[in-house]
Image: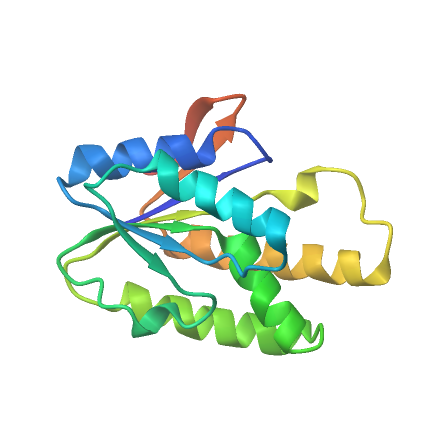
Length: 170
């Protein structure tokens, strides 16, 4: 089962995903895709880790999510935007290569047996038009990956001001 939780920044995506995971499993897995860019980002990561109690298994994995064994587990993957950023930086902003690699990694997760994946993404294309060429390229990458994930997902939930609106599935 694949859930895609999407929405704008601070729309309640992570809280919704974490609560769903706790409803579905006693000991869910949390996969953080953030790269530790600087001290401020490390503080953000530390704060998020403290928010989760000891029921959670925490895994930090910047790119190669298919290396994680998900079978028989409920997992939250937070988040696609930070995950794609890692590909984007490492591949020198090559959108096609990033998209190919990210799709392959996701397929490696989706093809594992008996998994429940709750993946969080941002709808960055709903905001202000990016100022820079690089920003516009990343918005394209994010939008295309979101479309791919939504097509593969059993359920897609759009978070709006903390309110979940199911746009695909039950």
